[in-house]
Amino acid sequence: MVTNTAPGLDLEASFEQALEGLGLSPGAAHLLWLPLPMVLVLVAAVVGVLVNVWLERKISAAVQQRIGPEYAGALGVLQPIADGMKLVFKEDIIPAKADGLLFTLGPVLVLIPVILSWLVVPFGQHLLISNVGIGIFLWISLSSIQPIGLLMSGYASNNKYSLLGGLRAAAQSISYEIPLALAVLAVVMMSNSLSTVDIVDQQTGAGILSWNIWRQPVGFVIFWICALAECERLPFDLPEAEEELVAGYQTEYSGMKFALFYLGSYINLVLSALLVSVLYLGGWGFPIPVEWLAGWLGQPIDAPLVQLITGSVGIVMTVLKAYLLVFLAILLRWTTPRVRIDQLLDLGWKFLLPIALVNLLITAALKLAFPVAFGG
Amino acid sequence: MTIASTAQLICFAALSATLVLGALGVVLLPNIVYSAFLLGGVFLSVAGLYLLLNASFVAAAQVLVYVGAVNVLILFAIMLVNKKETLAAIPGLPLRRLLSGAVCGGLFVLLIRVAFTTDWALPGPLPVGEEATIRIGEHLFSDYLLPFELASVLLLMSMIGAIVLARRDVLSSDVITGESVDQGLIEKSRSPLLLDKAPR
Image: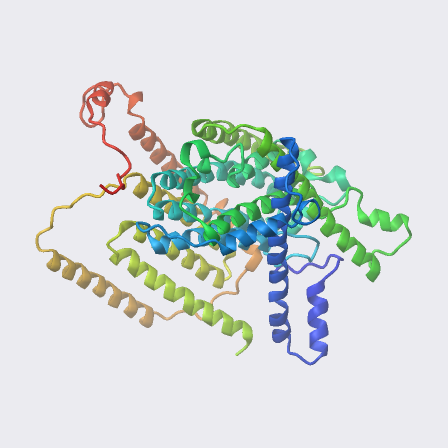
């Protein structure tokens, strides 16, 4: 783990100090600490999905000039819970000619890598599960496990539409992983580190002006397109294109197994939005650096209350930026038509890949020419 | 024994068990799709072992390259040519199995012997931890530069080969049969790529 001496709220150290004060050994204190952030992030991810489902329903309704859910709770906020409950209580059907084991394992394999990737999402200087040194690379490699789960469920369903959907999903995710990784590489090159915390730290100099989006506009667009393709959101939801493939690899699924796919895709969307905000929009940074604000107000940045406030502002900013991007994704979904599979693969291989390579090359050149602005 | 070392031991035991059982499954299972999926599990447990050895970058690269690319492409190939063919029975199959089993067993015994007779330098050098990424980069651009570049040339060659094989239409005549390609495409009987699974 990277030892970080930068100021900021360090809950882990305080928690372990308090427990050691009660007479526990450092190892036991650490063991008691470990599950806390994991459970917290898991709950946050699931709540994020509920919010996401509600937003999707409401925004799609607004786009189509409907009202959307309105009876379950105020403005229909309880609708996602009703949806989830329905899926929980639905009968779990495994088709007679399907391969039971792979059929069950598929959705699990789709969901687990997505949840594991939350390991590296920072909400503040010390507010992440683990500041692993390979940070963003871990996310890229974990997201490459997902296609196996999709292929598995597509194959195990013993259904032509499912198999085609699974194959399409795998092809799509392999094609878009490469420009995505190249776009990330350009950012990593500027921050000299793979760690998500370091990437955000490198963008905190002058508030909104130092965000990576100004230095990597092309990379931002490439990353966003690829992230949408990896999440299988419209205009790239080919694996489950209704009028061609019924529902792709999800065709035979119902009940909780279908819910796992559903959960996985929404968690992935929130995760992608969070990572876009980390990589390009300054992560937990406020548009005006909080250090400046504290200075103008005459408050020391190390005071406990100020630290609490800056920590909360950081979390709010991360989530706010992520949900603005989610809003954009939902708007895109309900306003754009679906591309064809050949157009999708052409876009990935013949357009995004060369552009991402050129972007990487230009970033390297700029880094050598202007080390001050591009992280020398 | 501290909590950390106990956890490490348990992880090592679990990973090794899945690795060995998975590898046996890859070789022994008759269903090739199961073998391919198990191969992914084997690659993942190897990545886990790398993690235990403090080589997180190598572990992530292992997952990205072997699970995310190699294994997915293997699965792709298997599923695209998912034809059930009745293979002709090979004569003397039990004898062949016995012989290959004996060869594998001999190899295993040899490896065990090497493992127990070698004087391992334990404990090894201190793990570099998060510095590893930087060190790998330095090595790739200094003493391992030539192998690295040669590997890229090799990949380029195989890529060109794959394109030539896949796109026969860029050549005027078929590489193997020697006849005009377009003619071959017309005359070739159309066989479905996907298995007809509907019950009849």
